[in-house]
Length: 438
Ligand code: NAD
Image 1 (spheres, rainbow, N blue to C red):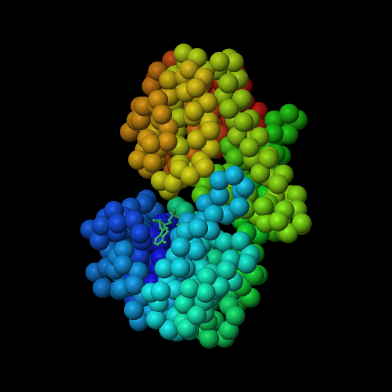
Image 2: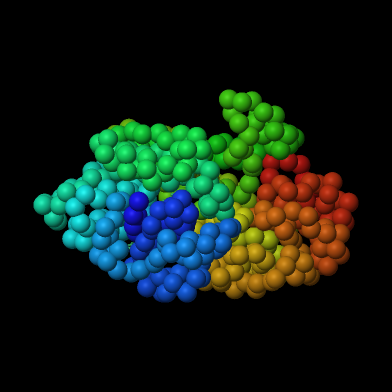
């Protein structure tokens, strides 16, 4: 199959690279010429495990190319995927569809007949029909079809997720479009991964419903964690005991500093907005959004308590600023509200993040960056674990405590315990949803 991927971000680049690895001929298009130049030079512009290796393999095999020229790319294409951003629109919380519609309009004039246009971006129900209308209005003579193929990969495990999905969801209007998508995903299909074929609206809804459900699960355990602290329970034991129930499952039950990232915040906000527009309020999702904000505020209060009520004059080490490990993505990361609160309160903030500095340096001001956790902790009055990167999971806590001015630990991912901290010489420890000391 000949595939064009519009957008070379986290989703578009990974999808394009993996489709090429399936054996398809793929052209990745982006309007960002600097990004295309880097890709052409063999450089991967984002941090995503394995992506560099799979990308190089497919460029070498001449199955994968990069360009800014959409018209040139679509010649002879069987399918064109739209994988551009759909951020929150300023002001009303709705998904900003301007990038999707701009891509559709460009396609209307560039595409040959017979192409299936596939929306991979996360878009509100009804958007695929708008894409269809936009193209048909701009070029009434064009023979084309529109399909929906929402993406479920997780940043940090994107290549693995794309190659081993729990399911592939495809929303179509004809058997012909379904066949094109089945042919594209055939290498997975042969390995028995289910392809769920639905109508356009259901496919669009599956994506929002799935993300909102996951955000709800995280927020639920975060709220339980707050109660655990009050009643003397340990949320780690609670989530373990809950998660063993097959009806509940143990994933997304880890208490922490609140969800962030490029998807959950914007997709829950957009779903709440869609509900309002259709007079069918998403009350649970609205509560999730509100509680998640409260969770982030609660984390800052916890840090304030550990610092004796004021950040002024304190030195605070921060481990991890990306919204989760194994990514360089800082979009809506909890660090973006927590770190400015520390700096604004007068603290000297020393950060270590294995991949976050490039993005983080532009977003977090008045902080210093360190190569390892030990450097970030040196002479600090408080060390905060914000992102559970693997390299923070087996630190020499005694060495860290010895190097700090006042050894206090705020473990907002619960990777250590009060006993670990006490044994290492920390004078205070706070996790999330469990009993600390000091
Ligand atoms: P991103 O911001 O990383 O990348 C978007 C890319 O599209 C950018 O490189 C931009 O330059 C390019 N672009 C925008 N308009 C263009 C146009 N008209 N022509 C060519 N290129 C254009 O976005 P992302 O994180 O990859 O997300 C893309 C979509 O996938 C969003 O709808 C998102 O909700 C969804 N999604 C994201 C994830 C994730 O983990 N990031 C997971 C599942 C779904």
